[in-house]
Length: 475
Ligand SMILES: C[S@@+](CC[C@H](N)C(=O)[O-])C[C@H]1O[C@@H](n2cnc3c(N)ncnc32)[C@H](O)[C@@H]1O
Ligand code: SF4
Image: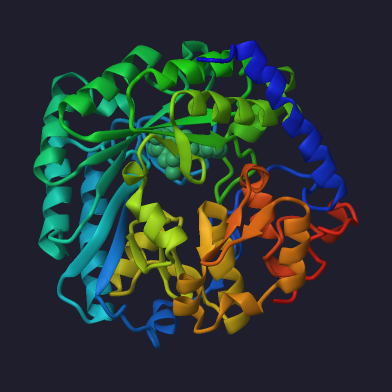
């Protein structure tokens, strides 16, 4: 590295000044960090049935979809995890039951769409731990997917995995099977390369095993994305910086960073909240967490990794997640199968139940396991078509026009002018894009375009400055 870690940490402190300045302008709230993963935020959807959602839906012209499948089983619960799961080693029968239900769900879904095969643009299989299946169950999963999904134009097939499901003899056999069925990219939940932090996180692998899993994946001919969490209790700025430098030397194609989210994303509140109440002395401050983020960005840049998709750093653009890019940047249609999975279909969003019993019951009765969602109004569609791509990369005028039928330059003029004045966004010929400062606070900038009913916090949690999100809020 050209700069020392101490210099990088010193430089990163200016982000704390930015944070305070933007807080005074009204951009940043008082409350837990609130990522803009979807719009409206997932917890804010109202009950809806599959019939209501699909009544007026028509397939995209090219007939292609991005596909997600969710497997909600894990060996044990990580402290930071907010996902509904079945845990433990004695879930063999339950996993078979689940796979049967998901197979049925896929058939019900295809019947609703009026298709007998899904032409995939990309596939992502997540969890839970989708590799926490026996080898025969894993094969069964691949077979049921292959029977229904046309892979001939699929550009990427990704699995989210846990390090110790892909090491050792069984792990190697699993990797080979994945490769045989077309998987070409793995996202490995490494979380930290510090064994003490991994222990605090209740992860069931060591740093050494994580490194082994990366080597095995490369050996099997797949690209590797590794994920880390920052802001977790016990982490220090210096320790984090050293770890990121180590990560940069592993030869992985992508590195993805998540800031710890303490409050639940969905219905289930993970143990992290109680953990933090018990160990307040271990929790990094907001200032330290911001410094950690900037330090990571700067170290990654020294090693040639740039943020090609929000919070995902890669050396080559082509390695980023197609699934995320298509759905969040290009606003293309995507369908999801399994517990908690969602579908994003042009002007509507469908969320599957978070409860196993309801999942099985709805599918048994011939319905999709959807229990919440929304067909967006024209106004909400405009907001969504800016928020998602702006947060993740940039809001392109051509995509906006395709999904709203209207020109983007007509909307949010006053809001965009103020964000531009604050140095957070730039309007280019083809797109609206975040500056470096805007990208650092991407979640908060994106929230500027949310309607007031979907803001993460009430109005009095923001300073009454020019960027107070209630101001200039009409598109
Ligand atoms: C969708 S989750 C899938 C979890 C996956 N089973 C795993 O642990 O590898 C993807 C990533 O989100 C991150 N993550 C999970 N819970 C989080 C939380 N509470 N705050 C921040 N990041 C979190 C972790 O880095 C995780 O690997
Ligand atoms: S974070 Fe991932 S591995 Fe850990 S319990 Fe949650 S889903 Fe399982």
